[in-house]
Amino acid sequence: MDIEAGNEKTEVTDIGDEFEVWFKETNRVYTVSDNGDLEEVKDVAFDKNPGDITKDKNGNNLDGTEEKPYEIWCIEDLVALSNMVNGNGKIYVNGKLVNATRNSFKDKYVKLKTTLNFKSKLSYQDSERTDFGDINGNDTDGNKLIEELSSGTGFIPIGFGKSFDGIFDGENNQIKEIFINYENDTNLTDNLGRAVGLFGVGNITSTVIKNLTVSGQIKGRGHAGGIIGINAQCIENCINNADVLGFNIVGGIAGGYVKKIVNCINNGQVEISGSTYQYAGIGGIIGFMNSEFEMNNSSNTGNVIEKAGNANVGGLIGTTGYNVNIDNCCNSGRLIDETNGVSIGGLIGLYREGILKIYNSTNMGQVEGKDSGGIIGACNLPAYTATGNCYIENSYNIAEIKGSATSGGIIGKIGGHAYKEMNIYITNSYNSGNVSGGTNGGIVGGVYNNGHGEKAQSLYINSVYYLSTSSTKSIGRGNPDKGNISEILNVNATEFEEKLNSYRDDTNQYPSNWLRWKIGEKGYPEYIN
Image 1 (cartoon, rainbow, N blue to C red):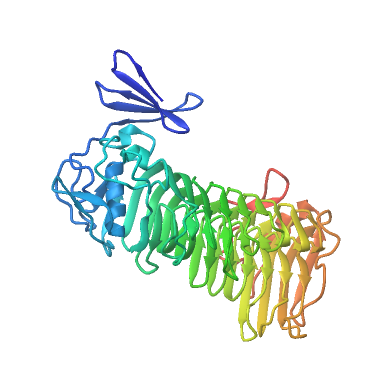
Image 2: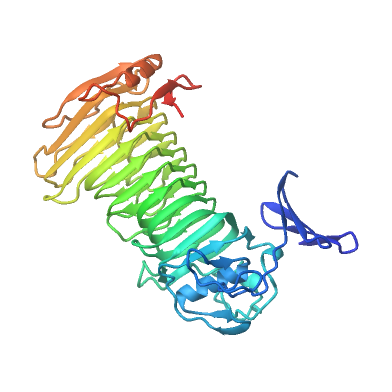
């Protein structure tokens, strides 16, 4: 509801978690938090060509090159971008309303020039306009733009059935109070095409999204992510504050199939409502990966909730295989398996193939499920011909771990399926969290054969520690057929720092790619910044 004051010279509007105060004579807008703190002051940006991203706000031509990128100044421009990528709906060209034609934006640059809020009239040039037609799937509601984007199915993802192949730079601006609701979508013939997020579908070889924060609510019955549903080359310097609900593969930043995620944070709650995939996954950062992937300097603080029955849960990644590198990442969100039937891990739910490397990474979020681990829920390869090498180095868990079947301070379960060979290396790491439930161990919950009556896994442990109060055993069940288990120590917290920093590799050096340690405020080792 709007509040008019000062002879209509000032307008106050509730725009979600904030209030917007518009001084009309000076065209300045003040954003104030619910508790009265001043959040932002800026001039109202008027766009001479709303709905035409090929013009800047003054009407100058843009061609989408790096030197003259397309520009987003208002929500009409954002709708136009979506319509152009999807090849549906209306856009403006040289002041005339025309039907949008498909444009993938391959090798083109798009920049968000100001923060936009879907609930703020000042983020539109005309929030009451109806010329963009039916967007939300209800053609009987009058088609006012601000109402179209806040009801029904809401905003149509950029790349919904088609892919956005370009480079999108948010320039450290935000898209607030986005509303996307395809939870009841009946068109599931193509999970990929129906992916939801601010961006739905991208291109794994060309799509780049960077310097952007998103908040609001995103729901789908396909793959889902806060920034993008599926497929991107790189997502960098992005924050998701939106709550995300999806199907099969879901992540706070991306659903799946991304090559690189750098300096990203998810603060939103992430949920998966169902799945038909054998290796479905939900993660605080990304739900599923089965190709080359790198994640650096990223973290999740949001709750991750599994309601599907067979979707593996991870604070960072739900299900992963092939070649994946994780460095300097952290989960502090609570991981919840409501069905008690999956693998769930502080960083990774299920590791299933290829080479996985985890360096300098931490779990601080409670983990509770079937096969539960402080770093990885389960290491289980899918086929008798499969091989894998998993490395956990200079990493730790400090959270409580509960598993109905197996639970471990570092890894919940190793083995159990049919595979050829799997090597697990845990080096210079520790667990101080309490481990309980099922078969449990301070480091590993259980080691099992490979499903053919053979022990084909090797477990190499060096300089690994757990607190005397966390568990009674280092490995809860079983032993590998081979491997070097040295220095699993049950020590006091005050001994950790010296032991971790005293580690030396084969060249008698502390590895250059490892962070060093100090005693933190709670008495346990943490990384030196």
